[in-house]
Image 1 (cartoon, helix red, strand yellow):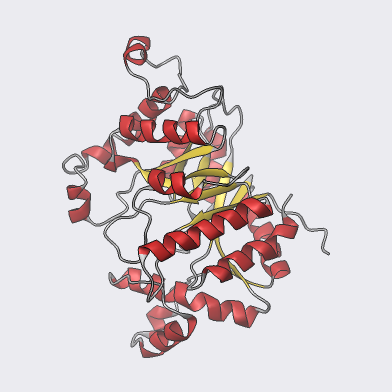
Image 2 (cartoon, rainbow, N blue to C red):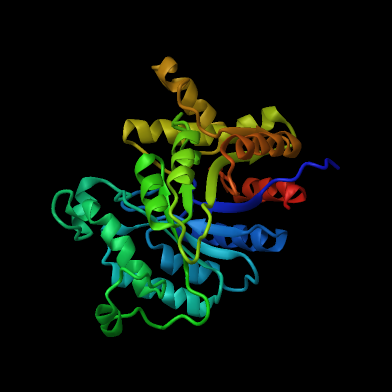
Length: 341
């Protein structure tokens, strides 16, 4: 066995719906995945917020986490993330305060400023008109901190005496994270002294080093976070060989292609995805759709992840996988478990 050891590893579950399956099937698969992650010793399990798409079953992270967390014993449960411009901060605070009461000391609240959907759906979510809700994002994050018990000197004591999310947390409160894939999130996380999660799993070719370095250089210590803390996501699939991992990853490339074309549908099987790929007219453009970034055997992927952690200085890694069959995601977690710290 290799002596290679990785930083803390966590799981990002997009709760994708496979071709021929239902949302109920996707949620049942996610329950199997979180149970495996908990058993194997992974650190966090995050779900995201998406709307108006047949390919993703995770519309409400708080509701989903209340179900997925049942019968888990140690893994942290969280959002990666809640799209805060879609919601009043008090609603989010109450949802995650309730989760904290259900799973004490194990709740994370990752916050993003994108709508997580198309403009029509964003309007139906009762967001403020225009860009107002997005522009309010820093204020809303600061408000959430106070509502969830992370009171800063700048908070109004009078306001907090009159308004606090219930049920009131005990000695622990949810960890609040800032998510991002650009410099904006890095700047806000640094300014507020919060941990930062970089969305590297998108595979859009962006350089994760620059925003992470900016975050560390400008970080203002807070009482809860005296030092900067970085979680770096990565898209991974492990199989018995690189060729098999590449075959299992074709559905993720097709999903990336569909997203680019504005026609995202359920996750295809590897064979169906290969057939779809053969029918794409613009093969040159399709070749630029990266899909899954880290493929191979357990040792090959572990070494790739170690290089990513060294390159970015990440304190933790968050693993995502888009596969047709949840068994392939579970096998990926099992294959990387020997490298857990």
